[in-house]
Length: 350
Image (cartoon, rainbow, N blue to C red; front, side, top):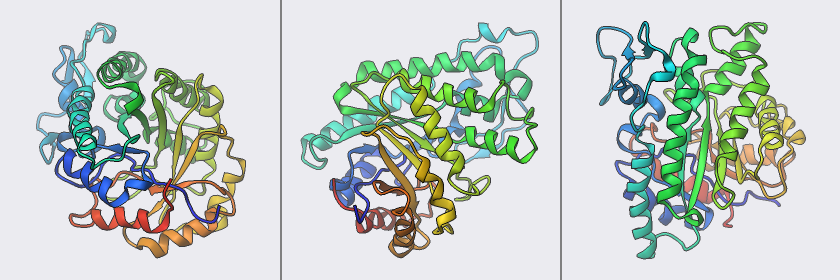
């Protein structure tokens, strides 16, 4: 292969509504896409930041701080289990992911019936890993106890999505970002990560969780992973030295999952078009049918920058598609069409 094949939209897209996202993506990228997300509009615009408002409604959960921390229409204050409350007794309300998926799927199906979305394209639903929400919003000393409670709530969301959407129309993506914050925190602190990690072996603990999440998805539904180093103000929380930790994580999840993984996405920082970054891809061990997407499309340098990174990546991963390094829901207004067009300029259709 001399050029990438296909493209992946990671999740969030900077349009105001699901119909605009799906219609525009199908128009500008249609032959490149096997799956189309709804762009995570509304309160999902900033990934998991709407979850404190949802979880804070549960009896036994308190918000930390006396005053709201505004983030557009959200209150971003963290959470804690109230004193004297057994975390196992807490019942979280519906998290909002299933309701959004069901609503957006009806739009997806209508657009496909009208001929705007190509037949065979799947509807992509992106979900955060339970660890991400627990690790981001609960204090370290409470995470081990509250994680299984939130995990059950997320699996109820997944089950509701699986019940409502035909399996041959559906693709589930698990978003892994907080996991890499934990990995890098422990690595940079000489193996001490008590503030960020509440388990035993960090690699086994994190990758087994992700493998379990993949295995919860029936085999007639596609499942993929977006591995991420964060996207606050279009910046990673730390720049990876190379793709080594991403490759190690992908290999371990692949080995541990009880079902095939349909795709894995790995980010590529904008300044990295060197062999050193991509060299760990030589050791990537995906199943034969697993699609690899590299997040090497960046709005700042467009097709030319993407092609520089592609040229280097091809020396280490001869078969892959293209993507951005994270969702583009927080990209500057007016730049989204250009980002989608860049995908189309640098990749061949499926």
